[in-house]
Image 1 (spheres, helix red, strand yellow):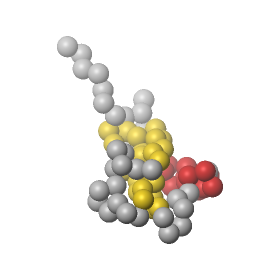
Image 2: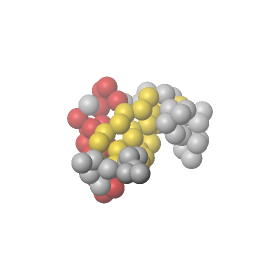
Image 3: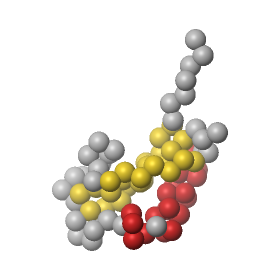
Image 4: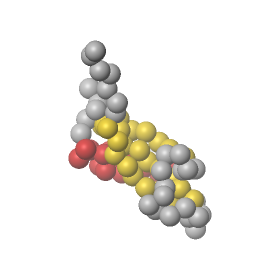
Length: 76
């Protein structure tokens, strides 16, 4: 069961790193992971393995990695 997702965000340089998020990113890649420690590792691995597909355009974009807890359904 994956309880977290690593989000690889490609953001424009016109956006500050602190403001870069899923809603204003140029591209968002979601990688399922089992824990928070894997967020950075799996996201970096995804970038390295598919670098050409996910690479930001030099001088125009940058990469930011976020870890998000997946929502779970309550049992009410």
